[in-house]
Length: 201
Image 1 (tube, rainbow, N blue to C red):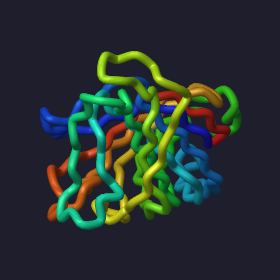
Image 2 (cartoon, rainbow, N blue to C red):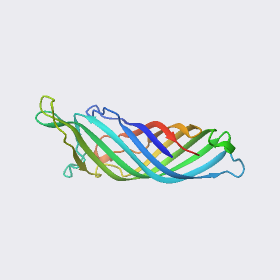
Image 3 (cartoon, one colour):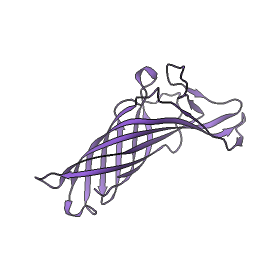
C-alpha cells in the first residue's frame, strides 16, 4: 500500500508559521485475512515506513537545542538567514485495518472501505534549512543545513485511519491521537494527513 498525502497540525500555536506543500509519503507491506463467514469482510495488518514533511515560513524549529527544556520555534530575520525550514519525521509503522469489499471476487474493480489504526515508533527527526537569504530577502546561495533531534517529540505514535478505494486507487485520511510534541516540551499538536492511496486489497 502506497500513500501520498497533504499534512498539517491541529492546535498549532499562532507563533508557528506553517506554510508550503506539507506532505507525507508512506509505504507498507500488508497481509489480508478474509472472514470465513463472510468474504466481504477481512482484517489486514502489515509493516512499513511513514514520513511527514512540514514546512515553516521564517520560523526555526530548534530540534537540536539540547539545553532547552521546550521546543522553541524562533522567528528568523535580520542578517543572513534561512527563509524556510522543513521538519521531517520518519516512523516505523504497523498499520491494522478492518476492511469491507463490495465484490471480493474482483478486488481490482470493487469498491473497498477500511477503518483502522497505525502504531508507530519514530526512528528519525530533523530540520532542514532552505532558501538562504540576506537581510533584504535576496538569495545568497544554494545552502542547506540539517539538524537532528528527537528529544522534544513523543516517539510512539497512534493514529486513526480511514480509506476508500475503487479498484487500486483511492483516498485516505488519518489523525494522530497522541501529541507529536511531549507535554513537557511545549504546545500539544496533533498531525493529520489526507491524500491518495494505491492498494491492491
